[in-house]
Length: 363
Ligand SMILES: Cc1cc2nc3c(=O)[nH]c(=O)nc-3n(C[C@H](O)[C@H](O)[C@H](O)COP(=O)(O)O)c2cc1C
Image (cartoon, rainbow, N blue to C red; front, side, top):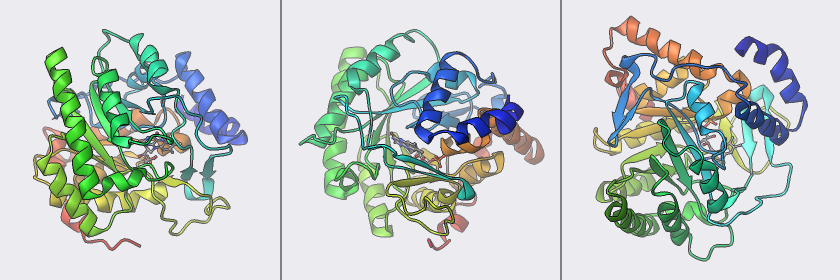
């Protein structure tokens, strides 16, 4: 299937508009046209964090399945978890098209989708069809562009999906919703986490189950901001931190699309997001779980994220360039790494290169 992708499918998908190609890939997954890889292929890859048992450390990042249409297909491709969303309370169209650009010579993507979402109700209806199925499906929550109280939008997401989400992600790091990233500032973040925390406690009382909460940050933060986020997080009841969303930086790109407005992901994001991940690893208690995202396109880059401090990793743009065989290839590579180093569990490598990564100067 992967060879087919690299020879035929990839050429076809790259010959059409990026957003149309994305839609076609969702349709293919809905039809079951994808490789099948057991997610629990090796017990050495199993990761336990935030009270959840992940069959392996690799997840599908938010933004691919925004409306919760194909989480089970993603899990069947080998991903140990699928994060759906970002979902906003009300449906909203997002920004004008074109709004996704493939930077082929850089193996990157720039998007300025602006939280195009079918909204809570439709996403809930989509997810309800998988009620009773196993597999870790996280729900990434966002705010409507026209909302006058962003925090209230996250709170309403907690109430709406408490019976369906394996975990929640509070996404305050999209660069495409004006004002959203300001929620990363200490005061606003503390207020947001408090209000979301109250909603979670209400839901525990109703459902008898506490749903883990992850926070997702940008890679465009200075050291004092990272200090503040770490201090706020340790005082909150958040369970994990996802590092990172897309970047506004534009270093060393060659593609004709390099000056498009939006967030950059893929290979050109790898170094920056891994440095920020390592900086947060050093700022947070060693048992505070981190999820590393940004530029993973191989087993080597997935393992490097783990060594820099990630308990779990996620990817999106790598699938655009490597195709649907990528999760299986990464899991194979991680198993080989366990063989070579005699690791009894992949977690033994977490953070061992954090200091080296954190010392690299951002360009
Ligand atoms: C087209 C596109 C849409 C995205 N939409 C979202 C989103 O809705 N919510 C979110 O938290 N991240 C979103 N992301 C960011 C990814 O989840 C991820 O953090 C980022 O792309 C870095 O990973 P990558 O280099 O593997 O793509 C999006 C990324 C892309 C490329």
